[in-house]
Length: 403
Image (cartoon, rainbow, N blue to C red; front, side, top):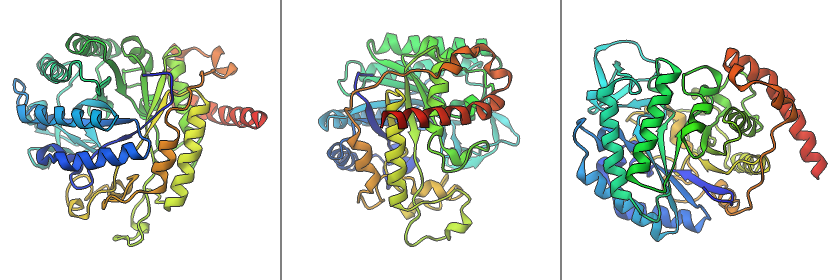
């Protein structure tokens, strides 16, 4: 990345959501990127929906590549860095998967699968183990990275958005082999670009055979996502969760730098239908969320994270409410840092104001240095619960001593 604290957003257009690439509108992207630049944002993380970019294993859609290049050009025109995310994959409680990555049989899934315009409950083939799928992934990397090679806006790629929510490697060695192969493919097709993997809190809660240690071995920096209201062992409103997850990630990764790639909170709209009581995820006022962002950014910067990306750019237009994932995951409608009409929420300016601050070094807590990272997954939830209170108390005292 760079020696300055990076601020950014995860981007889907308000009127398109996950259907963006099916109805690409360059003028819409241009307006959005201009607004983000004006608010001080530096980095945009985007998602290459797998079925749109690779409808068949041997076919990369040329029009999608063209629109991706237009997106990169617009990012550069507005002085933004672009981070494309491959193999998407898991997104907002739904797995968006091409039909050729699915097994024929139906079986219960934690997350519904969206494929060929409908919800399915077909099982996903193991994208880490299945050589047929891996060859297709390498093709996507080669075509995408070759198209963007040398582009001044594209400095980093993400190998997946919370991919353990789609499937899990059968063992750690298979996960390492997959990481090695994919990272090398990116480096060969786009020399000089950096690579990360979009991990999330559940990758710390249980052994999913892709450890931060493994990601650190092959990737240039680590990424972590955290939302307190999805976790059972922490209070819904505890902002200290974010630096804690980042610190545990960098410790497991042997001191590797960590981008806090996703955090945020859904807004309670003025006219909400259905009522907020019908939505299980807590909704906050814009003022509460601005304060949450202020505290989160202060803590993430103070604890040595290399940057923070808010989730997400925009609330979604009501015309999308009857489509997955917004029909079922109603809180996902309101995570935006802007309203669907383009007006800005206060938290966006707060996020942008942190961009370009000098990065601080990360100092691991002294008590953590006596723990063995290779034994962490013997009892991950127990470790998180045990360590979080110690971490929070120590960090609170440290920040108070600094004034």
